[in-house]
Image (cartoon, rainbow, N blue to C red; front, top):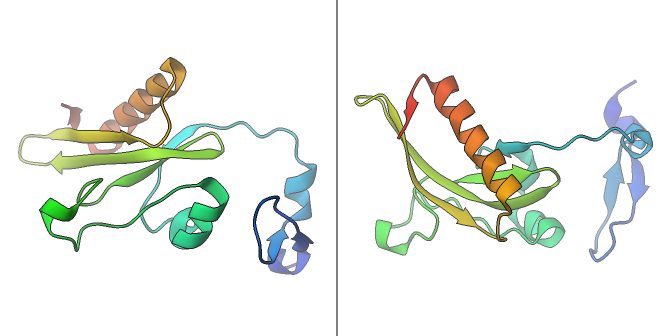
Length: 135
C-alpha cells in the first residue's frame, strides 16, 4: 500500500494547521537520535515557516545575499541533533588544499559538551566522506 494513504490526521501541540503522521511512526519506541548536517534543501526544513513553527528554527539560504548581509554563511548547513534543529554549520571544501575549512558553527541553543562532541564527530565524518582533512 502507498505510504501516503496510510497517513492519519495528527495534532501537534502549539501549532496550527493540518498535520499527517504515519501510524507506524507512532508505534515505534526505538527512536535513536544522532547528529547530522542537513542540506539546505532537505524536506525537514524545506518549508521554512513550518520549520520555524515546529522547531523554532530560523533559516535562510544566504548564497544570494551580499556577503556583508549574511548571518550564517554562503551555504550554511542546518545541524540536526537527535530530534532538534540546533544550529548551522558554515564550512567550505578547499579542494586544492584538500581540507574542509570550518568558518563558523552557529549555535541556536547552547551546546552541551556531549552535543559539541557529536558535532565534531560529524564534522570528521563529513571531511572523510569528502576525502578531505579537517582544518
